[in-house]
Length: 592
Image (cartoon, rainbow, N blue to C red):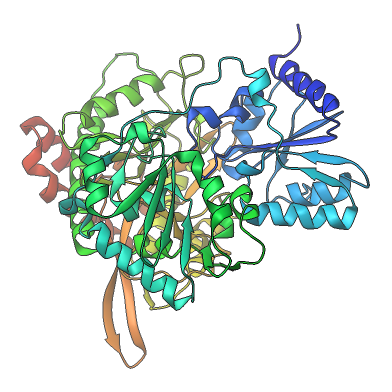
């Protein structure tokens, strides 16, 4: 019986032959370079079966390849099994990058095809440069997906809604002033914005076009005296329309952006982010117009939270801490009842829904038991899940959107007795988290340096983890928000009032995975003759599993940090818990 994935690939190859295409690239992306595209754009999953959030498929007339990062290597082995697709491990020695592969394998007079709307202009430019060097051709208007995906979902039609100023802290008009200040500093008169999370932040609008990401498929063009929003007009109800009219926002159809940019006068100067704008938009701009390629100013503006956002986010974490602590009480008090990973996902959602400010999950809850837990972004499904049994770890990574903000928390639980080695590894992950959480550092310290503070603890075991140590978290926005990404290569300085995750881990394939994750707020610690020093305040209110900790591996300072953390959790959550839960939590967070 022919593998279904191979059958779909062969259908694409037949279309490639008809169009004289030698190579076809399909990224997991939408027209906005979003991390989590809506179902309409999940063609990569439809063809390959790969369910991760980062992947690019390349199909030639003879072979096919899928590039993804270290979070998904184990997952890919499982999901690509039986297909012809070869896994290409990103950032691993011996595996060429997509661009290196293109440069080596596509040659004179061959044709590379793809949908240019699915590629940032930055990536498109790099491919174009290689094509000129190797003298092969590019067709960037190729979309075979509609022809083979007969029941393809339609673009979403969910209504937009206003996130009121009592939650956002700053009005749209004030944010617009900040954006225009940045435009003037860059000597530009037009700003083209495609990033959905930045549009949501700027306009104080949210929607439900993407599951787990409260965004609206849209574009915006901002001049020094006008604001244009390109969106499916059916999503704009009377209340939102009135809000936009009041703020002098002109509304146009979503796809009209491509016609509009062609009409921008040549005496204008445009600010645009090549990394976050698709190639069709930039290719549509008149070549005589001055274009400034610079990171969207909204990225840094939204990463530095205002006082109301910070206070509201802490409220959201308390609410989420209550839900997850109730879940932990339930999990730790199960007797002989048989439960599965799916039950874990359902139970967390059940506890969250008890709060009337809860909007929904921040991402698909990861509930991974035993051999599933080393797969960093494993998701149980009705067709594939494990039952929870004694003697191994259960890893739960979950986040919620509340009107007050968004959360992202990971805890790993010992189910029954686990081995001493497992406890040692758990404790080292905890040590890593504590090491960064209690760090003090001079203002201007780079995210890459902070990554090393946490990772150094895991390196002591000659182990490592194939992901960043942490990332920014959006305010009722994207769960992964830049620019504060704690990755070794990052040259971005961490700044006061940024909210970042710290989530080190140890992952042993086919054995177990451990990840612990808190959110931390950057604060000013002191000023002296050496300058301003910063530190972190932990704003997550969920206890660690003391049954998985081996105290022999903790220093006195680390134990003091843990005791302070536990005491703060107990005092904060106690008023919101039932008496039996309070009694359990008091014991679970007792001083050690």
